[in-house]
Image (cartoon, rainbow over all chains, first blue to last red; front, side, top):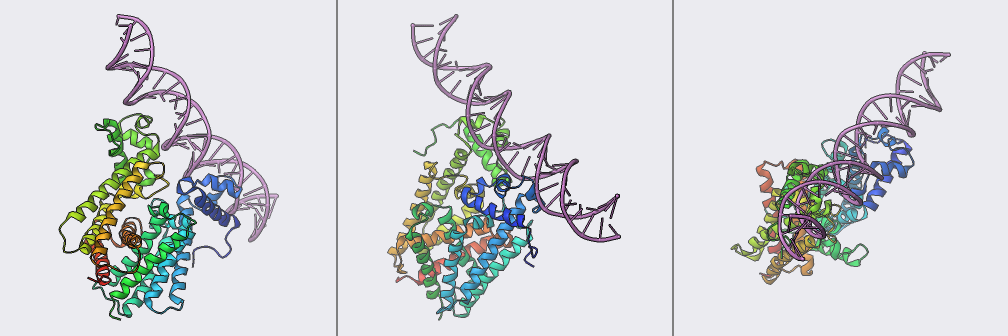
Length: 207
Length: 207
DNA sequence: CACTGTCACTTGACACTGTCACCTGACAGC
DNA sequence: GCTGTCAGGTGACAGTGTCAAGTGACAGTG
């Protein structure tokens, strides 16, 4: 049900891996199907026998990304923690870490000009599943007394916004220069922001 | 000092406007310099007499965007409000509204593959100026007693993350489908998220 | 006046891209 | 032996960003 056949053709997988590799090395602008085919050692047209077009390849990468992200959310939910707030904090850190460890996936996941979610239902479904995990974590916080007088959807949107915004700002935004890739400051900032967020949540809960 | 000459060549301005228009209509993928030139009624090479290359055009758009964003921050800071927290809340709403009203500018501002900030110092400077305004607003909150045991930088990063993340999620992310362009729900969600955020800040302040 | 730069812009070419239509060869079923 | 299917290849097409060279208007200077 995950859309890929049980034994994916070798070439299909090789194309996907080459695409991710190229994406990480050259960025979205440098991703060319012909270069991908070259790296996979096949003709420029071979990928079209496994993917309808360029968007389909990127869609498959996005879907893979959403699945990986969901796994991290599940791990954060199942990991022993003192409170639901701590779990949500872990999930936030996991979200940003995912973005920083898989920048190619992450960028493709949120670029509608590359992946139109309506045209790649598998990617949309995987994204909804991931968002569903986040909502479960928020629900646990509400059950533990979180109350800011807004709907669960608004709270979930806030939580997702913090994690997503921080990921974007570090990956592609102004924080990229302040926090270089190999610096300890990067991880420290991520954890600090998520601590800020957890403490705010705790402060607004009835406990 | 804003980098543009006092009387910009007419064509330069026309190219910029045509680029923004095309960007809004077709998205980043549909932006071609040749189409821009066509819309401006000039040859495909004419834009190169006003901009070094494609990146320079996008850089100019990004710079313009950061200036517009900064103006909104300034307006939020100068607007009468009950507290610094309310001001920060207004700034957050203004940030998201800017993103939704100027999607072309916003997308270009945070796409390093389109605009390399290092290569377009004017854009980087404009971005730093805008971030500076945000930091002033956060400083006002700290002066009013906000204390979550983290640095001002971490607090500012959190605030920016919420606004930036929400903008991205509505513009290009999963919230785009939940909150269509012409729906009241969109504005309501933006305000709700920012209220959540303000209340959290107030709850963690000594007052 | 003629000469010389300079400036805004055009023309033409180049390599590269995604995609289309068609070809090749291997293999399965009958 | 024949046919259909399917992975993959070849070649062509229009569209792209960019380089190099050309054109014409205009200002300055002799």
